[in-house]
Length: 123
Image (tube, rainbow, N blue to C red; front, top):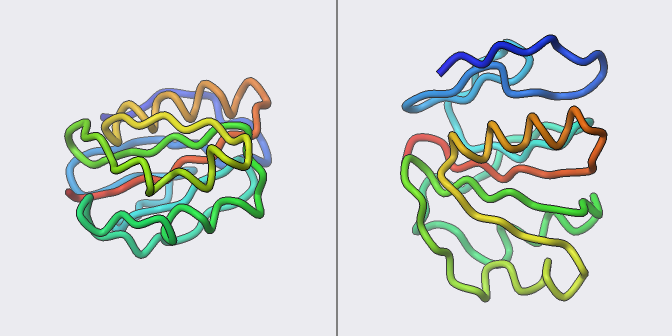
């Protein structure tokens, strides 16, 4: 799905997503990503089954107010221990399919919210 947004200068936005890719600021990524308005990194979570507490604890230093967990092509429910550390730190967590996480991230990021998206791509 191609998203039609006016790019906001200086922040990362999802410009398209589909089977096996997420495009950030018009640059295509085939692997899973950690995405914040001012940070973008590869995320070594190849599929939903690879989701662990350690995989999400790397978001703690960024101190987002909310983490959007994109669980792949379909919405799945992660084990609570995967995101317990975030909740204990006062960080909200929402999980949804990756496409919904991309769209929600764009809305919140353009509102100026400190949101993080952990996106599983290709699962």
